[in-house]
Image: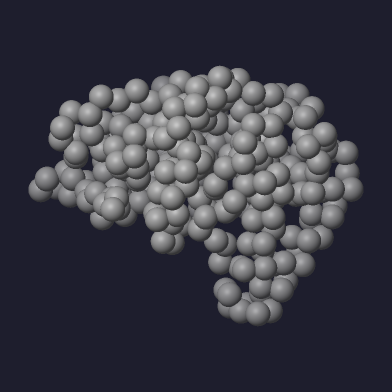
Length: 310
């Protein structure tokens, strides 16, 4: 069936609706266990992406043996299976229902940053459960604006959008997002965005990630240099007992050098270093099946393009 066809859109939407109904009807622990089982089942059939994950893991952890590599790769699928079903379980839940599921660490960094009055960027990664970080932030601290790419299936896209906004957040879609982000920051608002995926050379700068050049968006660096907004890297870790810990790290501290390109690369490297530390701490909670190192430097100069901020 052709991708994007009306029939496929409808089937995918009905399947998601049925899975969501099952997840919400079950006790949450059962939902998480079911998600892990489905994730492992998918790993057993998704040879292509398991191979990508294992290759990435071998390069990142060269001292690991094949048993550890395979166990972690399958663990990644189990983790994201649990997270996906948990997001379906979370649809429509009240703040009271969320209170026992989430704890905060480092919230004082957010409050201090917001007090400066220049807006706050909340860079995160495809790690743990990045969606719960935004949901919990809005429920317990302050609503934020979430940068997202719409799903190819518009009927499916309504589901994550509703989840992201159910506690008061606003979704900004990536296309033409920059003017909206600047308006939010200039009104001392909060913007959350993901910074850990490969980008094409024209949109990124190369920084080291697990010792390899990784083409990375410098948009957080560019926005910080332009607006002097606060930058607080944050993540949401799934704990062994099924709760989440939202960890707000120390704010970025950067003294501009006067060389914009050096600053873009330096800030982006610092943020990427923090993401790497998160992943090293809990490797099975990051999206290893993504081709993070797909774009590589040009042989002649080893550089990529920049993001222009008006």
